[in-house]
Amino acid sequence: MVTAETFAGIGLFEGLPDEALASIATLCREETFPSDTVICAEGHRANRIYFLQDGTVGLLVKPTSLPDPLTLSVLKSPGQAFGWSAVVKRSCTVAVGVT
Picture 1 (spheres, rainbow, N blue to C red):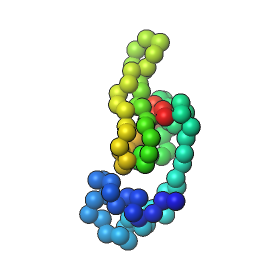
Picture 2: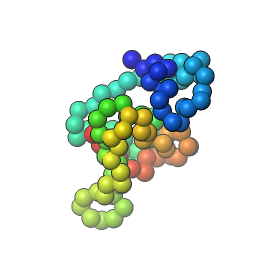
Picture 3: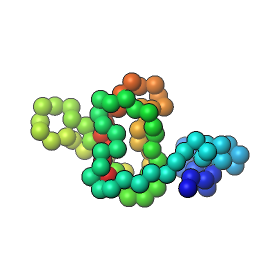
């Protein structure tokens, strides 16, 4: 369950009053993904931002004709975000998030 406390420790929400955090929490839901799941795919419309609570997510991009994508980053810390395209009015995802 997503609560105000879920966001209290995330830097992006630092300094917001509890009421604001509680309002944000009502817009969210917790999701769990098995290993090797593609959470958001490059070139597809982004409609969610994700905040890591536990586990690891690799951010991959395929900028060339090479067969394998390049790893941009590996998220491991609670509170790290990915899927920013959903909130900055980009029309599609520019990297792939994989568990």
